[in-house]
Length: 222
Image 1 (cartoon, rainbow, N blue to C red):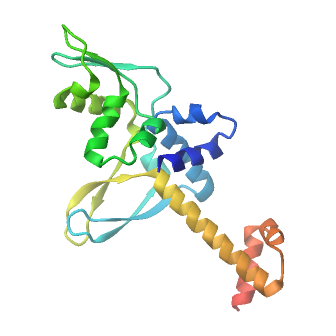
Image 2 (image 1 turned 180 degrees about the vertical axis):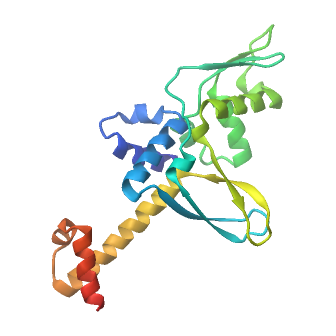
């Protein structure tokens, strides 16, 4: 999915180098992908999820503005201090997601945090990122979320069947990719129907406005 995110980003900034896009924080990436989604399909979002308790399908309707949050601007490093540890770190980017996409979720989360640690030490010694205790990693994770809120969008979902309320993550990359796939299949079907009925070439059909294509399709369908 991280590779798809970078491919979508390349359409937002075609002049940018692939490396610079991969180095953007996840929130920065998702901010631009939300803008792309709004430009292509409008501000209203319709999607489905399942209740985490009873698995009942739930329809969600919201606008892009509802989930547009602050995102981190490019910064080399950040810093946190706990009772006995000091940690200098950077925010996760697409390179990290690509490196860890085949890892199991629990292991991947810890590995992701470790990859982002630039330097860690106690008052006496330097500490390897992999050796940081859980409470330090938890503080690190919380601080990352504060610095880059757009990186993790959580929707409050209320189930109409069992009345439970839970937080559901919204991933703009997978959602936009699915929308583009559905759009491409729909256009392909339109081209097939018009070419079959009128004998027009694919290029000629695609040069038509959407309104004109739909008008011919209505004529075919009676």
